[in-house]
Structures are given as C-alpha cells and as structure tokens.
Length: 411
Image 1 (spheres, rainbow, N blue to C red):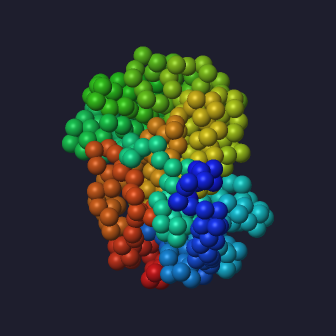
Image 2 (cartoon, rainbow, N blue to C red):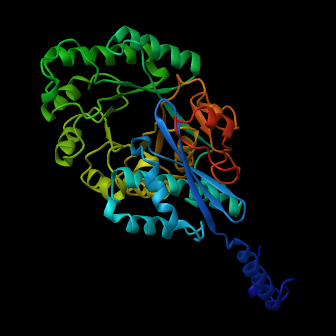
C-alpha cells in the first residue's frame, strides 16, 4: 500500500517516481478485472418453500449463486433477463441492477415476481464479484459491524391453535436448540370465528390469541424474545384491540396485523400501542418502504432480501430506517443461499436486530451447501471466504429439485 506521507517527507524511502510506478501497476492489476458474464441459469428446489436458485457464470471460470424469493415462483423471468447480462461486467452491480429494472419495466419491475427475480440475480452478482475481488460479500456493501448474526426461529406445532402445544415447542427449541429468539403464527383458528373474510376479531378470538402469547412468553421467560405473526389477517379496529390486550406481555413484536396496502392504517396501529409492531416483507424496494419509515408506521422494519430488491437495496432500506432509529429484522424463508445473503447484509448494517430462519424442521436444509454448522446457538457466523462464502452441493440440489427442473452446469 502506498504511504502517502512520503509525498511530504524529503527523507522518505519512496520518491514521486516510485509512487507513479506503483500507481501504474495498480492500474495494470485492475485490468485483470475485465470479466464478462457468459450465462445465467436457474433451478428450483422443493424445500419447505420452492427455492429458486440462480447462477451467474463468467469467462473467468468463477460462478456466483443467488436466490429469488419463493413467491416469485417463475424461473422464466430470470431466464428472460439473461440476454441483458451476457457480455456485461459482473462487478458493475448497481448499473446492472438498474439496467434490469429499466428493461423489465413493462413487466412490473417495481414489485412482485419481477423484482424478486432481479433480487436473485443481484445476490448472485455479489457472490461472483466477491470471488473476483477476493473479498466477502459484506465488504461490498459497507464492511462489517458484527462477526455473527442473531437468528430467530419461526416455530410450528401440530396444533398451532393450542397454547399449551406452542408453549412446549417454545421451551423445547430454546432449551434444546439454543435459540434466544423465536416467532409463532397468531392468525390461527380459535374455534370462535363467525366470518373470517371480514377480518373482524370477536372477543373470544382475541382471548384465544392472548392465551397463546401468555403461554409462550411465560414458557421461555427471559431466556428468549418471542414475536407473533398475524399475516395481514385483521381489520384496523381488531388489530388495535389485539395490540392493546398484548401490552402487558413481553411481546418482541406483533407482525403484519393489518393488510399491507394502506400505510395510514398501519401508522395508526403502530402509534396507538406500546406493543412493538413490525411489517415490511410485503413491500418492495426502498420506494415501497419509504412511507412506512418516514411516517414512523413501524417499530421494526422487516424486508425480505431476496424479495425486496437484493442486497444493496436492503442496505438502502436499513440506512433509511436508521434515520428514524428503527431496527431491521429481516423476514426470510430461504435456502442457505438467501439466508446467508441476509446474514452478510445484517453484519454490515448498524441497526440489524435479527434474521429469520424458517426451516428448523427440514432435516436437509444445510445439505444444499458443502459448509456445515451454519446456525449454532441461534447465531449464524459470517464467513471470511470470498462472496457469500457458501458452495452449492450440486448432488443435493439435484436430489431435491422440483420435478421437471434442470440442474445447473458445472462451474
């Protein structure tokens, strides 16, 4: 590295001629970064969700792997974007991202399947760029705040409506698996419903949900934080009443209590209760998250990285949230690829709270990559290897592919 103090020190070892030569050498080294994308391929894995894996191939023999949000469910959109990328330099991530947004504008590139498809490619670009530059992906999005990321585990039971079953599973996962952050669904049938389509909660329904919250939070005590997901199921009035009833309990957050379209109602719910409110997974790009944050309509923002726009877009969301002192808890239902992409970003932003893990009951989740022990004690270590730091096990991918899918080419 050039010591620029030598510019002002007449007795220094370096001279201006040396500095010029060193700069010329650096410029020559940069020439080795003239890499081109040669192909983009996809396959879909049949996990507890259909995981869309994306690979970007280069003429340097390096391959990057990404993941598109399962709800995109359309490898065809990614394949249609391949011609926009062939021959381009994979290091130009921002330019290629905007290029895809513009080229796909006719297919709705501000949201939905298209932005999810672009997210998968963008993650793969970070993976291959990290390999080209020999740096971890977190270095490409700002550097590291933490060596490991807190993981919260989304839990399920055979009878999710039974408070006792939820309490037992909460205790088991905290005691035996070592998680100190968990989440349960709260939009489960109570047996007291009259008409679920109107989103109205009757008092017995609210009482039932309070029983679930009380049972699970008491089961783990101060050993773990417990969040609850409502999946946009309730009316504004019902959400307010539920949030009020939960104020006396140690709720980490109440997630998505009302439908995602009307941010004014979302703001009213959030600002009208001391129960922390989280939302964000069903909103796309920074533009979609902006009003939630500027209106302080959330206590915790929850973007889904392979859905919201990718790694750099998630950093932008986090930076905007940080202006309002709002933490980020990333929604995540991904394979190890998307989960690690989320962890890389979570390590690089100051306001990261946790990253979701949704596959604790799937015995082969980690088999998709060659690396082992990705999550230990409720934490995911962030690798120092280049890119995402993961290597796909193509045999495992082949074993678990959705019927009719084709395996990637070898690197």
